[in-house]
Length: 454
Image 1 (cartoon, helix red, strand yellow):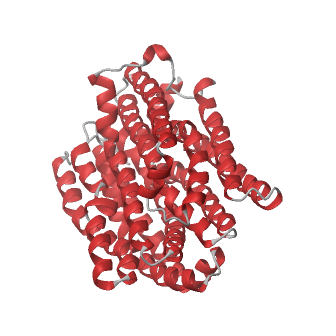
Image 2 (cartoon, one colour):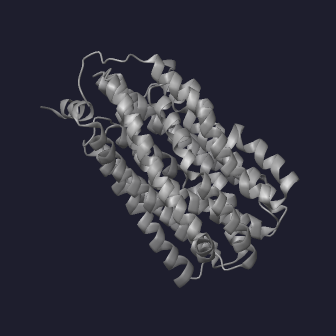
Image 3 (spheres, rainbow, N blue to C red):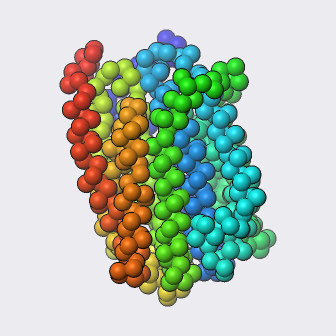
């Protein structure tokens, strides 16, 4: 049996729970390690000054822009590749993989050029204050230089996941994260390069990680390839990649805009407020990564089996993922509430940062248990190509719901409004998501085209 047939059998016949956990566990490890790096990076930078710590929160908006392009092309290609392989259309899968890879690099280079030309106004736009600006400019310079690696890594990582090779993807991401942590220690603590050391470490590790992630495609471990001859700049391929991946672009793009507005609103209360909310965001992202990693195991399972018309497996996959991720976040949220002050102090032992961050983290942890509904609903619809509803859901948490809250609440409640805007947005977004989920499952056949038990 050749590689393509093995892949088809694995994705359509392996018991759903086992398949999701098998695909999701490596992604969870990757995301946990990546977020541990982000937290360690914040820890090292926070040791420089409160303003330097705030710079990490500002530049996070830039990283979200790069991730928006990476995830758009990665999820857009991955979903279509997985559905094509499920339908046994291999040539079409090759066109999706090659086109997404090269176009994503071109998009990242445009961001780099634009960012370097307008670096100072860009940092102010992302919420930098005058005192944070020197640190933000330095850190952002290295992030922009590594843009091509960041974006292409998102594409290769997601294609590997959608092909069911999450373990291979994990190696590339984890390797880069460990190198980044080691580089932070060397450049900041040993060589005393300050925030430039954090940026240089990120840049080097991103390119090494990108090289590792591209190796499976070069060494023929995957069905997908990056042959130039397979690139198709036409409506059939490129537009389908963009429309399918557009919910990811909106989700990450809204994260960038949301971070920008959050920084500006927090900035009215000083650099300590920006630093505190940045730390809360990093801790929350770490907790969330434990759940979203398993959630991303749902995407290839859904896309492949939807393409193969195995609808019972699609239903089973969603229900299991929703229950599993909700349970994980309930536990982590409880731990975050119990140790909230200690967690904030770990990053910055500044009384004002601790005061603001402590309250913000408690409310964020209380809302964590509602996030899987929004997350799973968005992933489910995107994976089956329902880009319209998926885009709406993707824009909720950090956009349609969050932006009015982060603008209005601080004017009424002061800094408390900044602290509760995201948790309240999470709860409202999850409630709005429920009708979309119910409607989708009512719209698909109750029986498989070829009956096969999960």
